[in-house]
Length: 222
Image 1 (tube, rainbow, N blue to C red):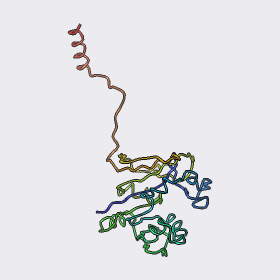
Image 2: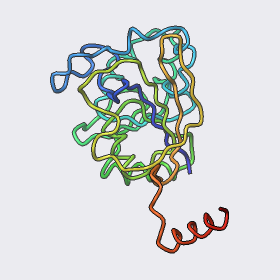
Image 3: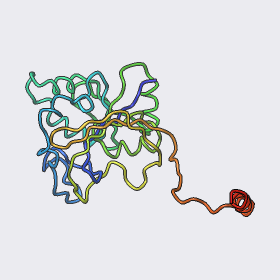
Image 4: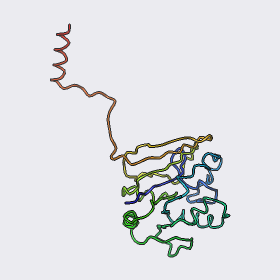
């Protein structure tokens, strides 16, 4: 079974809405579109593995698909990311689109969880979600995501669409790699690690039997 990797950019408070520009997604009156731009430098540009779709098939929600389709096909041929994204096989999850025109794109039909489960069972390259917050949330709730590439930018936005909303499925994650750029972007990779584990820093009161045992030991030691 092939793996499903979710890759996204978020603010320190978890907002993923419109990192690329003011007009990218102004839904809900979001006024901070383009918030990632000041933090780009050569280091993230050199390490786009988590976000460029290289050697993977893409899985995109409608909004991200429309943003990408309006931009990447029109970039010059010497742009390596444009070459990769334009050539990649693309699966588009949408309840409203009836056609997709970007090269090598197909619509997923029916229930998205069932459709992605079937895709994962096929032979082929790993699948990669880029952006597509609502799609990530649906697939996270179904425990279909095998890896998270999260780039955390040092900015607090206070409002906007978040990577994990209040209905997210509880679960633990294991950090497998991380590094920071010179501008403070923390590029981290996480793997699901089962259920949320709990504990307490407060020591429980001993039982009556245990209290008697400790008192006896104290008397004997004295």
